[in-house]
Length: 222
Image 1 (cartoon, rainbow, N blue to C red):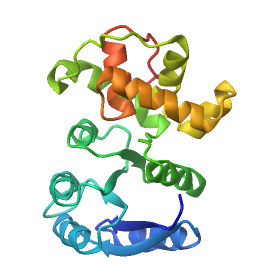
Image 2 (cartoon, rainbow, N blue to C red):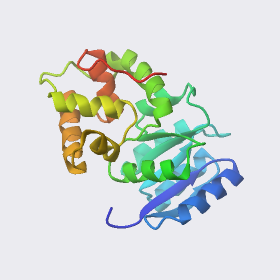
Image 3 (cartoon, helix red, strand yellow):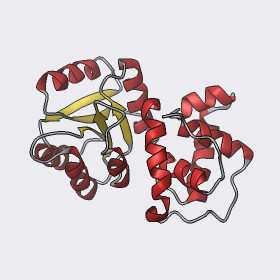
Image 4 (cartoon, one colour):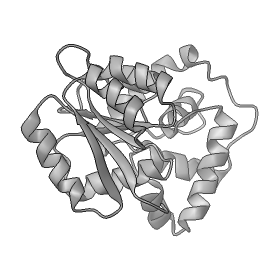
């Protein structure tokens, strides 16, 4: 990242929102540019402020996070939306993925994990909390035929399969690079090739497609 990443915080619980704002204020690479207490406010603030990242609570009174995400994806397509949820068992996670959310985090993650995830989002990655990875992928695999993800014509290389299996477990590019003893740029290149081959918009979709068609056989435990 060459400059500060501009973040919009959206949560109806003011104490949680202020605490999150305080945490992010300690990190030089991130700047909180606005706050919203519900989905309608989030849509308006996103259009006004054009943030790089929107941290979006799923469950809010009035317009919820899913409806707000749909509108922000339409009006501010460059903004990356990270959904916040209190439980990895949230039934709305698949819908959040389907409408284009780029990240999915539990509210009880540590500050260090939050920082890593937001940094990954700013780099163009799609982080998933490891606790949620298995549930999300299990749901996605069942919906591959409805996501217009055809069987890929070009096979994944053995290294690409290794990278994708680790991505399916919720590891970001830096973690994958460390695990496989590769340069982060090499992992990024592999992920680019994987997404192209599988016609997927995100690593979650790519992993689901590969699992559905038997290109990889590992799926995280739920």
